Image 1 (tube, rainbow, N blue to C red):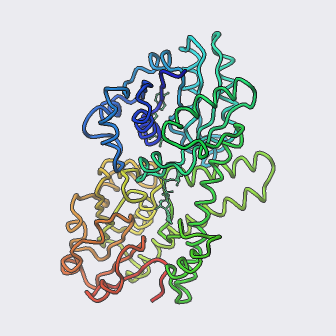
Image 2 (image 1 turned 90 degrees about the horizontal axis):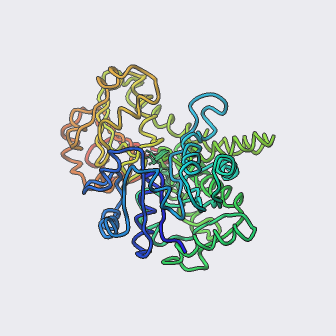
Image 3 (image 1 turned 45 degrees about the vertical axis):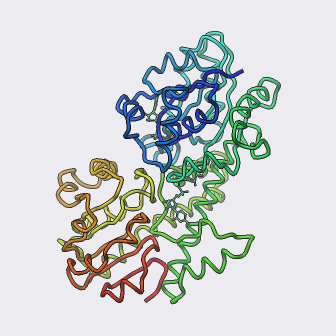
Length: 461
Ligand code: UDX
Ligand code: ADP
């Protein structure tokens, strides 16, 4: 019987997942630990470190009852019967596999800590998105450095999308659990099945061998990203031919074999998963000598890079081939609406492109703090921080961001952008007032009637 569950890593994945599990399993004690003290402090406060609709309510109900947050990694490892690893796995920034392979140093460190502190048998669950066969490495570390206890390693990839994490957890299409197919492995799988079965019907809990589970996660994200890159490829063709990408998406989406979801053309997909997972897949294929397969998937990322730079180039060419000294307003910095996460957001790359052409950019985003924006730019290492700070600023007011701007670029599909007073914005802009809708959220006709020169992704003149 599982009485205590520990989660190492209190981020976008670990936090919401444990909160929902705790709410649904009041008889189990959940302990979420992180090395980052300020993150833990935030989880215990009224200002959670991550923004997700509905999350605060869930946390409030379970916190202090059977859901606890702390930085006591050692204590949490000792007490947990089941330990989730939910630490970050960014793409490697150095050495072999740079820019492609996942950096597993945090996962490895976690495994070593578990081996060191565990005094009794544990079920270790890999929750972070990981390249296939990571479970093997975790197993090896646990068995080679442990001092007696036995470990079962399970793979339980998350399929929650940011912005809808709580809903995705509550009403999961499916839960996937992979483990060894021997007696001990199957018993461990069954323990985790019970935890989910508290609210997810048994038939939606899929159990597989560990490699299938790991690979399914990468494959699911690769397929989703591929759909976006496919429709984005068509968006460029729509603009050239006069077709309308939304009409095309609707027309093909009504074919039940294709379906309507994930066909929204955009300035490009972002987020912590898609690019990273595809690059992992590419790296894996290369490792096994499957070069054609690697090139095939790599193209999904190439197409996404193209879509971002195509949008930036469109802004520059439309503004009479120069944005030097011109103010461009960005509405949105997050990689999608309803999240404060900015990892791999298209805004970062488009901003970088425009800054290279000496634009000055004023950003408004309802959830992203200014400091995060500068951290994102710093990671690119394109120019000194002082220059970024001079030419890129953030305001907490959309009207202020757009005031005296030569152009506005809609980068994130926040609902509130639809109901802005667009007439007022127009009146306060430089003329001609250009508007670039990279998210297909604005009413093109209405805005043209006001006087804006509107460019919408996937729509010709
Ligand atoms: C994704 C997967 O959906 C989730 O299952 C996985 O566990 C983690 O990765 P997430 O990155 O949170 O989730 O967001 P998602 O909603 O998938 O969007 C990813 C990116 O694609 C965003 O930048 C979004 O704006 C973009 N997108 C999505 C489009 O451009 N068009 C679409 O039709 C859908
Ligand atoms: P994700 O989106 O995968 O949840 P995040 O970066 O939001 O990624 O969260 C990962 C969390 O894991 C971070 O808060 C980080 O501080 C934490 N973390 C990384 N390594 C360790 C470790 N060895 N022990 C405890 N926490 C860790």
